[in-house]
Picture 1: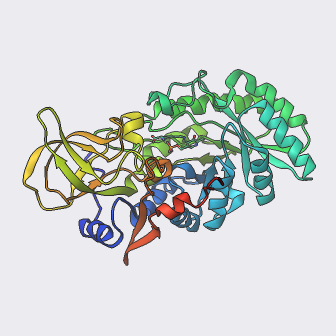
Picture 2: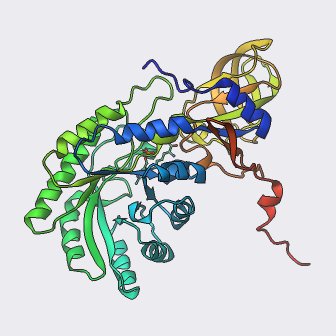
Picture 3: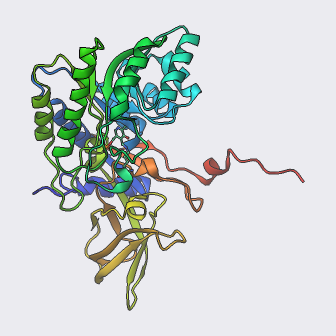
Length: 411
Ligand code: LLP
């Protein structure tokens, strides 16, 4: 692949964002977000479709707003994500609600908001939704998330479509659960859904999963249970280093070809492929600590800001935005958190000085959304690069924000 994760980012704009809003700071590029959205919405020809952005990848209101204005639907996994979608002007009728543990209050909120579909992951969840909808005197649109038992060939922590995973209804139980859903009050069957994992770099597992789900669609049809949509989930990978994920258009063509001639609307739930390479994390070098075995560049971002390296041993490109520094060596890029697992990158050859500005690429997805306050570190600022220049879309947290919900004991 000829493009690198940093291609298309304007260095001067990144430097300006760091100067204006400080570091650590996540920066997103509006034009890249729009381009990724357009790629997912091209090439459909007459096939009815709805792209539902997976909010968990990056729930920034500004990002949700950009997609909502482009007509996006949203895949949510909590009442909190639904409230974000509504706050950003998203259309609740285009929301699908996934997740294995939907709480009663979340189901009530989703019903009251008029979401498009509950992606039901178990029989007890189906029963709960039915009961609540009857109580609320409404009808819940439902789809069953089927676990197709295909190997997504990705990191085990983000593989979800195997029998051994907690997700969805086992393929062999799906028919029976649909029959139950067809009899239950308060629910209306509208679709079927699956999601087999994340950061997939091949098309074959998607097509295998789709084939298995289509097999069920046919079996249901023969019993008079007619579906309106098929949701193939998210999971399309991006290039972090040297991966060669399929082009969005090849992926879409493979899906569309499989669906040709069927009167089914296709739903997709991409997260990473929409936002991953549209965001970077900016951080400054606090100290350089050259050593005999390892040399450490201690930066002001840490595992609490970007968990992916510590959690999945993920590789993110690191580059300097400062003029070449005096100390050229192979560096461990680490944060100030008191754990050896607090690293952002291993073994990077860079010429550094104290105070240099570094950019950590491909962090638009599962960066800020998985950040925490570990070590009482306020979370980073977030900035959107627009035609007009950098715009602050989330202020850096303060320690006051962090301790505000706490209560001192009385003695
Ligand atoms: N739909 C469902 C039901 C999901 O569980 C997910 C992601 C998606 C859609 C979006 O998948 P994507 O297109 O982003 O691959 N924290 C991990 C990734 C976890 C993905 C969880 N589910 C990481 O940093 O790699």
